[in-house]
Image (cartoon, rainbow, N blue to C red; front, side, top):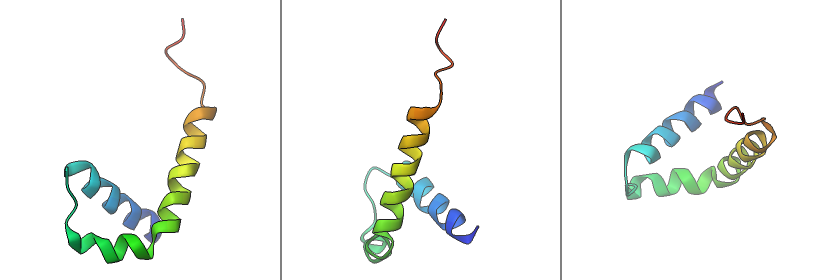
Length: 55
């Protein structure tokens, strides 16, 4: 749960700002692979969900 919370904070920060502070660099570098894997999983889930806009 703590990792999910941290990921959520990072994601919210990225979504709120056009440019990231350089203070994020060491954090993002440290968890780069975890973030990439999470994004891949989210993309796979989105592709697998049936579209609700079809008539």
